[in-house]
Length: 628
Image (tube, rainbow, N blue to C red; front, side, top):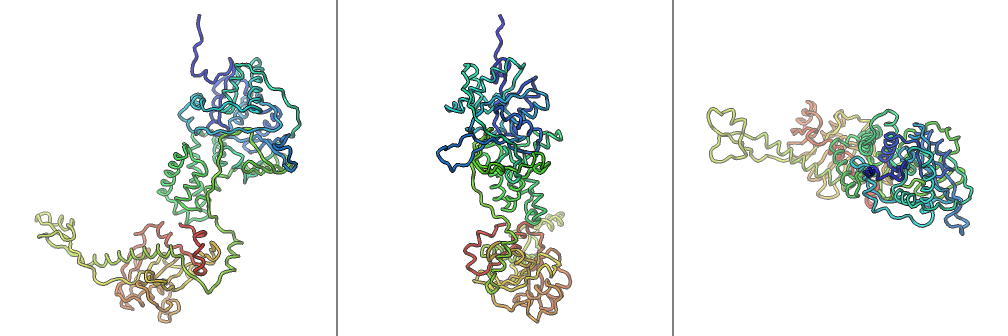
């Protein structure tokens, strides 16, 4: 007598011709597993955990994919019937390409399989969510092993509707097994062991309840798709692209995130090119490592939207975080065929609530509940609107302006660093080489030693102390400078002894209002005089009227007011002869440092500064000024 041997493949078998695929609703990885399972075995029927009253509307909506919609049913009874002011409640089926049940219906329709809706009709649906492992584990673990791993943690169904639904579905499966050769049940990973138990024990089904509740299909407002879809709208579109173009889609939960980040940077490049230029490959590398670490802290294998936004904010700033958030919620198919639903109006989804065009706002629960969600807060500073900027500009007091101290400290520190480098250049001009005797002095001169290798002598460097000092440092960020672009020309005096006297030309700050009493500008060139002292405004000094460009006037002011012979000039190119003639006119000498010696990202950060409308604005300026 031959006994059939039990294999691991039988773990997900309910009856002789019924298999179950437990899934996490709303997961793109599980949707792919459903498709592969249906195409990998000779199924002739798919059973799904939805009531038969939804079948016509759901199948019609699935045919309109990739247009996302929801099939909504009004609750026949409210949660609190004693409260007459309680609005209608709703249950809905999200027609989401990344829903495993919807993927099963979609595949079955294309393969001409029978589709059975086997759930119990309920006047008000009770949604049950759970906390599950990351579905990305399916890349290394088969669905049966995934289900077995969490089987011990699956709680028994609560008495009432949940238990009734399980017994009803088990009874419906017993009816179907005699009509079909091989059936696949696609259901929640929380329900499948209890459906199997009810099927094996032949528990009697509950008595159905008679009620009337209207059902209708509605499109979803594109701005609220993120509340209706299981995956991010951008990733959902990538799954649809893979289906349409037959490209690999089995690793989109990770590769799709990378593509989304690069797309966000590309969009930011068109909107704010200077900020996008700071997001270098090195910054992106730090961003992805940070995302990985945050995901592991949250015990996830793939990041959620909150993790991505927090990492973007802390590595590249609020602008990149906002661009990433806007990219994540975009779904390119949202506006296709707007009349496909008879134009009933779109449902506006929210956190456990929605506004249905015909029936009004009310609580909404999904009939395909997935992972439990926790909503967290992340503060981002969006770009101000044109109306806000106009209002702030109208309230500007022209008789009170000052700087933002953190930016002062930052650029003063950089100015001291440049002054030290310029002094080092002065000392390097006096360096000489001599034959080694008793001391290596300032180090071995390798070049001179190799040149005299045949003699066997060593040569050392001698760098004497630098002579003189440097009092004035000039930064020229944009050469040649367009006078129309830099209309803001001013001389500011130090508030204390640790600040420099500053003369600069910059962009118009009133064209970029970032907060009430806070304007943003960008240096084109700046002169730093340290130790500080009072000098005439170089932009109104008649002694400099002979200059022809704003760069020459700034340099002329530096040569005129410097008490030292040497003036440090940081510019993107070698000083032309006109600048050197100007220096000789005042008896000064230029010590040039190329601008490319310093990081472009650092220079962009230093060039941007803010003008405050009085010292009282400093008390709240940090709430509006973004640290670039």
